[in-house]
Amino acid sequence: MLSEEQIASFRENGFLNYGERVVDDEQLAELNAALARVLAGQSAAAPEASRNIGGGEDRVVTQVVNIWEAEDAFRRHLYNETIVPLIAQLMNSDTVRVWHDQVQVKPPHIGGPSLWHQDHPYWPVIQPADLVSAWVALEDADIENGCMSMVRGSHRWGPYKGGTIGTDPETYDPAPDDPSIVPPGQRIEVVPVPVKAGSVVFHHCLTWHGAPPNLSPRSRPAIAVHYMPGYTRYEPTSRGHLVEHNIEVAPGEPLKGSHFPTVYENGQMLSP
Image 1 (cartoon, rainbow, N blue to C red):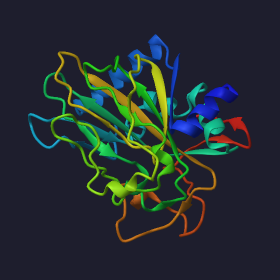
Image 2 (cartoon, rainbow, N blue to C red):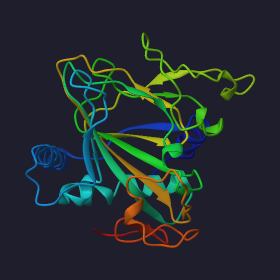
Image 3 (cartoon, rainbow, N blue to C red):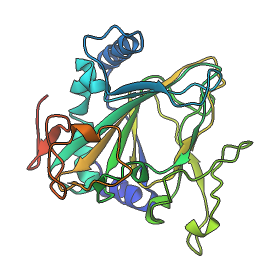
Image 4 (cartoon, rainbow, N blue to C red):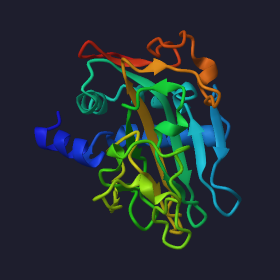
């Protein structure tokens, strides 16, 4: 379990690099083998989406959404017995559900950047903005191959337009076109967050985060599971979302159902 100091750090900074392994070598091998099958089109089922969001053949970021629907290893990962109770602590919730997952793979040499953004503005159909993501490196993610960076305390600055903060094309630092988003007395402090294979960084859904391109000879695959507290509501808007067609509850009701697994309920872990 997390210490009071770790929880306080997350509340203050908007992210927490846990540091300890949460996926062992056997699980890591299963996840990487399952990912290879999905990318090769060899899984028995299909994920919600698999696409290049990097912008071109020389800027590749392969995104796979809801890979858990295609491969059992990733479904089991949703229920990770180390991660889920920590998520419950960080959200201060006795019920935890999955909004969706996403794998991002940045291949060697041509891996594109992740432009600076917040997550929740891309998810306009769910409220409130209390989600926490668990980002697990499937291979070592470090500065050389484009690990994520966070802006300390930015989750307390409110949502930023459509979520995209703006990125300096030379430095890949955040470059908001509206400087007033930074409250008086605050500053943009970028913190690189290297994560070893099988380890996790947690971040709030309003924390600014981004990453430079991967120009190294190593790949940078990772799985992020976006967890939501049990009181998260479905609030449809005109903007919509990729997985909205899977929602079966009425507007205003807590978001639950077969496509949004409950992994923790009444303070207890559930099984896949």
